[in-house]
Amino acid sequence: MLLVLSEEHKEHLGFLSEVDAPVVGEFGRIAVEFLKKGSNPKIFEGAARKLNVSSESVQHGVEGLMYLLTESSKLMISEVDFQDSVLVLGFSEELNELLLQLYLENRKEIRQILSKLAPSLPHYHNLEWRLDVQLASRALRQQVKPTVTLKLHLEDGAKRRAHVLQTDPATLQHLIHELERALAELKSNHCRRILRNIK
Amino acid sequence: MRFRFCGDLDCPDWVLAEMSTLARISSVKMKLLCVQVIKDLLDEGIDYDKVAKLTSDAKFESGDIKAGIAVLSFILSSAAKHDVDSESLSSELQQLGLPKEHTTSLCKSYEDKHIALQEKQRESSLRLGGLEAVNWRVDYTLSSSELKQVNEPTVQLRLQAQDPETDSTQTTTVSITADKFRVLLTELRQAQTMMNALQ
Image 1 (cartoon, helix red, strand yellow):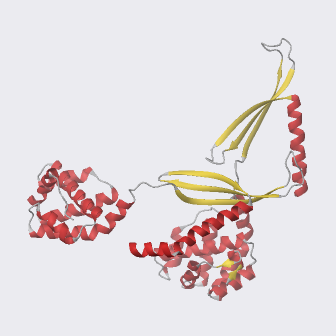
Image 2: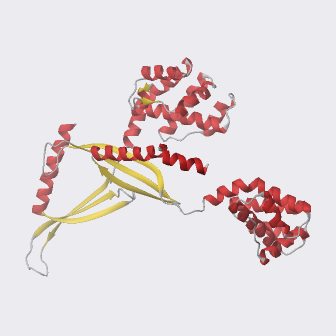
């Protein structure tokens, strides 16, 4: 699958052919750093001064590299496809080789970062529980009523919410039984066949 | 294999796996490490520099240090949770493969502090909506827009309680007439007699 680069993108990356190979390597390293930790515009200024070009072209070059890497990692394109896509830019052999190496080394990590960007539902954070026995109430004395009180902590991105639930032991047993059945479903033939095909 | 300190269940695999890691440090250092872990469990803060110094002889990497602290936390908190005496703990740990001197030093630390650990665990048990403060005031109404001579005492009660789901303080204010307040007081006194009978 070939990557189709827009004209603007090609123009931004065209800047890279005007600088030396070690500089491109440095830009590649900066691009990967930015993908991991967020961008830092001050670096553009410093680099622009050293290379005697406008900081805008440096910024476009680095951002163009970042976009190239994220798109290739997202689509998980093969080496050959990556090389063909980059050929369009008309870079030297050495530069193509450099970009390919950059892509292959960082592909896995970039994919991990991208996987965290998908929308997610609130997920389990912590569960506290307590077993009580109700002995009496205003209306009725001499009771024995066991209850289980649960505090389910859920995390959704940065937010944490706690849900307080209460159940009697019979319902809790039923709940556990249903959840165990859900886990056991993983071992059924149907699920095994699907998992085998995905792997 | 059922272990009392795991609550009559099987010992988790990771605890078994880390026994060999723990055996690498000397039993004297083990005792000091236990002291640090107990301080952490009692929320007194753990001194990671001290821990690093203690484990540096056995050349623990950061992963080993984390595993060691995790295993000791689990063993000590679990043993306090299930109220295991130190001889049973000692024999069970030796069954798991921890050398005798290490087991002895661990059990000695446990014995010194297990009451404090249980107190801390009792305090941190699930508690919903605890009452934080009670303020009251008795007023005497002389007259109102409805009736010229009212002459009635009322109690203003302000309760500050913790909201079970958000853990923030919620204030509730009620004003109660004399008769209703008498009923409230009688019912609460009955509940108090019942609570005292249970203690």
